[in-house]
Length: 302
Image (cartoon, rainbow, N blue to C red; front, side, top):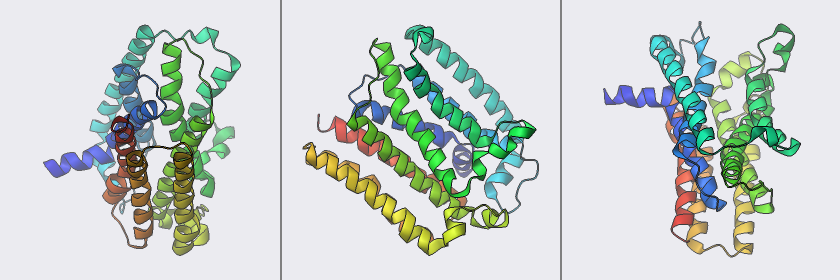
């Protein structure tokens, strides 16, 4: 029973929702912004689970070799009920959040609307607009660009939105600055690396579909040494440079370094074949590790 619950937690994308909420909390702490209400984080959780589960709802021909696809086939009714419930949770959460913290949407400037819409529009285009003449714009079919689109949406959702809505609740204008841009880039690169690792899992299907992901185009060794490890080192180097230049406490630097070290270790371990649960629990689990370490880095040194 515990193992079935464990698999359902990860296969059902509930872990993604937890990671999104935790990273949103981390961003508020790191940018010295007040927390949003509980309704906001509940909505983030529900929206993340809904979005990631959507891709499996119309999967009428599950891959027999894909344990995750088989789980969705066996639990299709449960997944449908979960989607209906989470949709209601998301709608109620957003209504409560707006009532608690009026956002005055009609007074938003063009600048605000651009920030608000660019990330969800990219997320929608990732699945593709369901119109025959728009099907060619499905961003999932962009091969090596696909991980960057996913990283971009995640970085916006967990780096920009939490602080933007926190500022709006206080009646302040969201201002971009060097630290906010670097934090966005750090999250963007971190999650992009995780997505490239997931492409390794899908190598066979992507190769058969002629989808030119990094691992299909370069091979496993070059993907690890020319793409994954350099991105990890660059991300860590940018953080260290900014942290030392701004005299961050040593404990905060150490705690924020831990996720990058683990990321490098996991990237190097991709030589060995991994199960789908390893990808979902360990590789994606690095997002939760990052959120915890980043939050502790602020709480223990402030």
